[in-house]
Length: 80
Image (cartoon, rainbow, N blue to C red; front, side, top):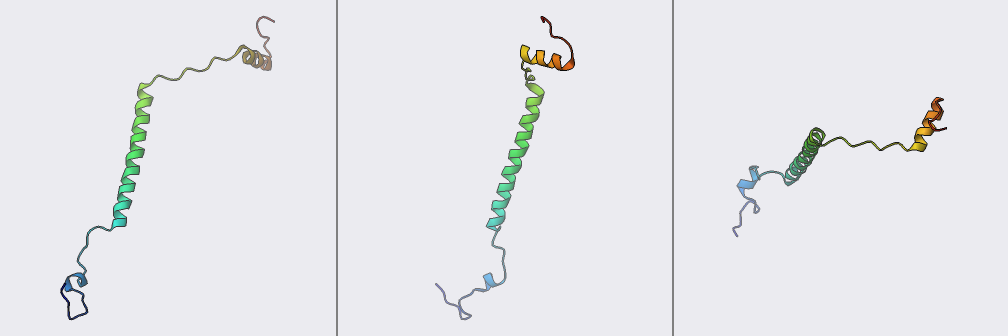
């Protein structure tokens, strides 16, 4: 190791040379990029599924529920 007369500090580091990217900034950029890819991918999959998959079939209404609904409307249910 070399010793300097000015207290051991070299002129190169005192001039403020760029040391590269800030590690916190790199982590932030990576996290933001991953989140962006995740959300864009999810949207693309949702859009593709909406275009290509058939719509879900509705559950059939039970006879009991149909009878109850018709009684609420004032129409007599068939078979009574």
